[in-house]
Length: 121
Image (cartoon, rainbow, N blue to C red; front, side):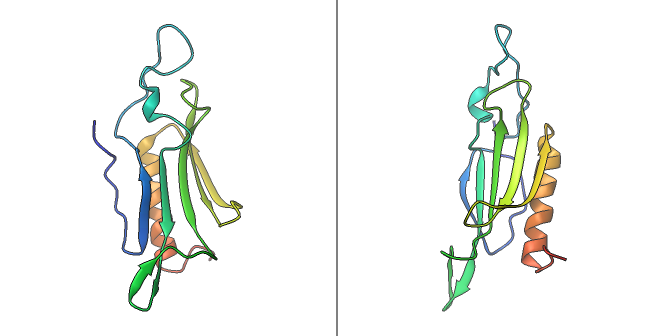
């Protein structure tokens, strides 16, 4: 197994990552996945950082967080759910797909929009 390759620009902190380049494998016994450990509610979390006094920090206010999970957790009929949220966990953008490459491309697009200050255009 290997992590999904993705372009993460400067100014973002990958705080948690188990986004693997792997297909879900349905169990022969029930509705769950044999490789369920890679398809849980907590797969990836990326925070937008700020540059303050020459150092990168994760801000306490005005946070932007990219969060990825598989819902329902470990379910063969589930899908990836990607959200961009603020510090109050209010959803700014969301994307759902079973295709990990669509999710990766969306992550890269959103980070680029944030980096360029074009997210809210």
